Image (cartoon, rainbow, N blue to C red; front, side):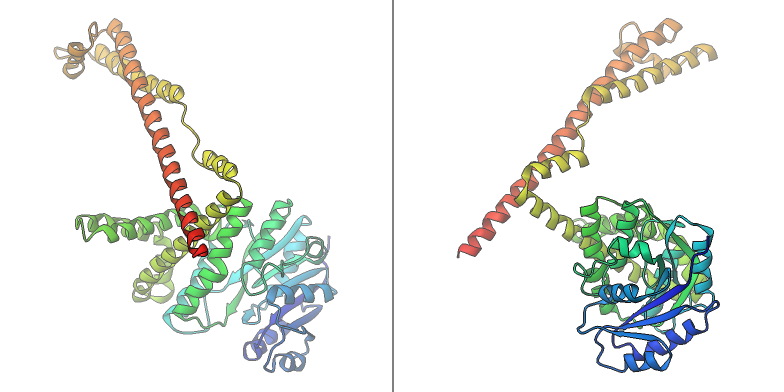
Length: 449
């Protein structure tokens, strides 16, 4: 089944400088695109003139509406069966369009495909190189059967794109996670998305530390966390993989230990251990940086990566706290239900039985092993149990009595463990609820004053 011709859509806002290189690369693609549509998002520079000069079809929006609206406008005007979205600051490889066509022709059920930046970001400097290489590495390590979509260099069947409503321009009027949200909708509807690691483009953007933090927090981490909580989907992919979640948690633990360290200096060692564990978990990432840019660059990126975990974790914590407060004010019963789902009550009898059987069988097998082994000294340590458990001996019969004692002791321990855990979770929930109630009362008092 032929994929059909490809229309390229490039959203652009005040991008006249980067757009020249972007369009020049697209014009050299093999095979060529059916058309290249530049959607000028009400630029105040020469973006439209540059696009016209280089032979692109130009659509100009009446007002600055954001890249989501610009891409939607371009897709509606496109004539190709496949729409390839390319950012104005991305220079695609010459085989990009060919790889898109090949992906759709090879898989008739494929809904979308996307790639990544390459490992040759144009802008020099530690921050720009680190940020762009992080994107490259994350996508190169992602699952081929993707859980999301990326519009920096990503293609989708035009008919399907229009059927699902395109990007949510009302929800994302500024650059944000509109592509990730579209990917969530596609996957929720049962459509497949593929990550092609060889579909690449060079990123031209210059990053500074404050712009990285602002973009990652305001435009990505916060809206992404809200999307995760509302959709209740937490895919093990890209920068949400298990090792990234554990790394984030370890950095959080290290931060808390550092806050308490002035009171207990011995906690500094535990904080250092947590940071070292983060480095070990991300050893492949740092090894990649060493191969690409040298050991000095890799060491310089360690604090940047720790900072990345810090503000990402704080962003998620903020959104989670925000969602809990909102849900409790609207529906306390629903919050209680979610809490019970997240921390299900442990069955005291079931846990007691499991621990009891484990302890009982362990003692039975240990006793039988010593009986079979024999010798002058047969299990002096186990024989000591006879002083505490009447009737127990290192014999076949004694092993059955040992199983009974082990089961009883293990059952009691498991039962108490489940009871303690359930009580601790309940007290934690009550304390958190009381704090939220007090905060709401204080806010109402301040509003009244």
